[in-house]
Length: 135
Length: 167
Image (cartoon, rainbow over all chains, first blue to last red; front, side, top):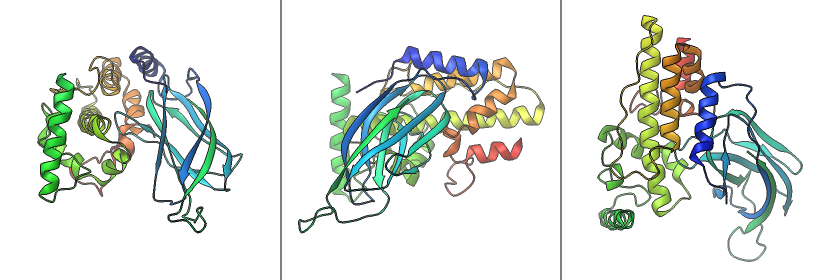
């Protein structure tokens, strides 16, 4: 799990002050994950925390789901509560946000609509969600 | 050790309030995590349905740290907005008011996100370029996108909306 480094955030914000809030390249970090998300659309999955150290673009690409699912995804700051707009992604689709301020962000996701992924078993069950993140 | 005692105290207090019918998912406004912060803002954030959504899924000290951070975020965002309004009205930048510091900070106060954002506000004001402050207050990933412009008016315009209207 990546964690905020204050120096990196400070540098990002200082750069923000100098150049404004647009069109500044972020120091990119990225990775891939597979995790379970509830098939109950009201249950939000809070997944990994990533560091976004300079003003720039963040993204989440949904690479695979089983059973097939459309997901709503976002990033939430773990300290201020600031959160990017929820966006819908299908397999192969990418949600991206530009001019994102530096912070420590947690990936959040939920299914677009509730469905029964659990057959005859109790509850709605989960789907396997694979994604690439970039911060 | 002090942090452990703080968490333990919060859990005990939370348990007592739960027994009295309070919402167990929210801290009491008397929780030690809020010591040193503006009680009115604490009350507003605890009552905010958006804030409750933002903290959902977190437990224990992670949740408490976020509650504290959101209170500081609301306070800082409003200070920035007040400064922006004055700047627009008078044509002159005014220094950001001193921000309250929590007695029991959840993060390192020298390097956490709120402190760094406060520094960005101060730099924008000192730089004399109002568009820099406007950019911070209207950024989609910033506080202005969800903090109400008017204290306690959760259904009113956000700070970002109010700033855009002024511009």
